[in-house]
Image (cartoon, rainbow, N blue to C red):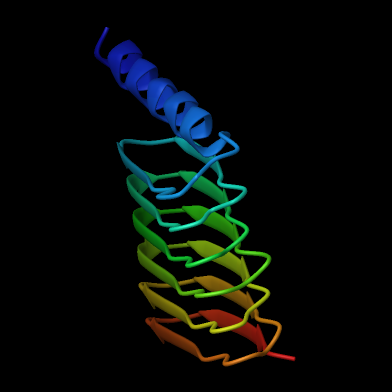
Length: 159
């Protein structure tokens, strides 16, 4: 019963997040999701993204976050704490930009592709066997990747 409640709450969060992100008019577009447990999935899409902000926190293991925003004033904050968590982040269209990813634990991976204007990507990974891929199509680009631990890998490009 406890597992069912957690799964139901997680499903509700994903559904309500997707519903909020799908409206055509988005002056203040803001999406905050917190998931505690394992095997959670967040699929977040904010298309017009006027004021923008996606704030996702996932704890424990095997969680996945897929975030796409289409920029404007932008901000994506992702915090994953645990083992084997994965994130795929795009922020296309560019304007204010700013992607901040923190992953703690082991075997976590993040892929960020930003598309720029004011840009700024910060990735912090603590633990072992992490993977980070950063692509940022220039403008005022800054990428700051910090990895602490062993067997970590980073690939960065800023055209």
